[in-house]
Length: 69
Length: 219
Image 1 (cartoon, each protein chain N blue to C red):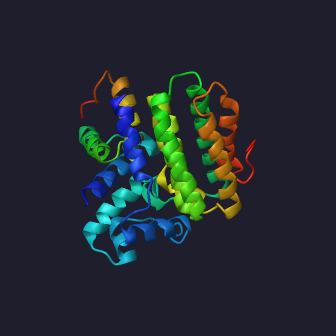
Image 2 (cartoon, each protein chain N blue to C red; image 1 turned 90 degrees about the vertical axis):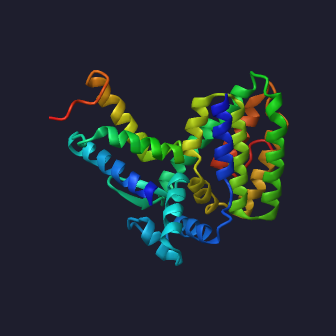
Image 3 (cartoon, chains in turn red, yellow; image 1 turned 45 degrees about the vertical axis):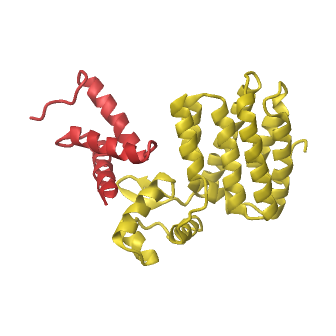
C-alpha cells in the first residue's frame, strides 16, 4: 500500500496547490515521497506534476522552500 | 545513452500481455469502459477480482504506471478516452514516429536495424495471428525501437509518455481484420526503407499505420 499512500499524499498536495496555491506544511516530505514514486515509475504523472510545482516554488523563493511561519 | 537504453528496455518490457490473468482481465475491462467513471483504489481493485490487499496494492501501482489508472484532480480514475481523445493521442504518436524515421535517414542507424527488423517480423507474426491486442503491442514495440534508435533522449521520453500500454489496448479495441492487413503491408515497406536516404515513404507508412491502417500509402 506504500505506493498508493504516497501517491494519495502527493495528489492531495498537488490538488491543494492548484486550488489556491497553498503549500503543504512539510513540502520536503512531499519531495521525498515523489522520489519514492519515481523509483517505481520514472514517469509517474502525479510525481511529475509535483516536481514542476516544487521546482517553480523553490526557484521563486531563492532556491529552497520558504520557512514555515 | 545508458538512460535512453534503460528507458527503452523498461518501456518495451511493459508492452506485453500480462502473465497475471486477473491483471489482464482488469486491463480489458478498463478499456471496454466496464468500470464507468467511478474513482478507484487498491481495495476496490482487489475486490473486483477477489484478490487480497497485497495484490490490490501491487496491481494499483502497475495500472497507474501503465496508464490504465489516471489522476483526475484529487482522485484516481480509469483511463477511458473518448473517440476524440484517442484520435488526438494517435496523431501525437504518428507525429513522433514520422519525425524519428526522418531523423534516422540522416544518421548511421545500422546497429539498430537488426532489432527493428526482428520486431517488424514479430509484428507480422502477431498480425497474421489476428489478435488485435497482440498486434497493437507488437506495433508499439517496433515503434519504440525506431524512436529509441534516434538516440534522442527527450524524444524518447515524450514518446514513452504518450505510447502507454493503456493507449495500445485502446487502439487495439478499434482494430479490425482489414486494418491488420493494411498494417502488415505498411510494416513491410518500413522495414525496406528504414535508415535509407529515402525516408518520406517510410514515414508515410508509419503515419498510415496509425491514422488509416487499412489504407497503406504505397504498399
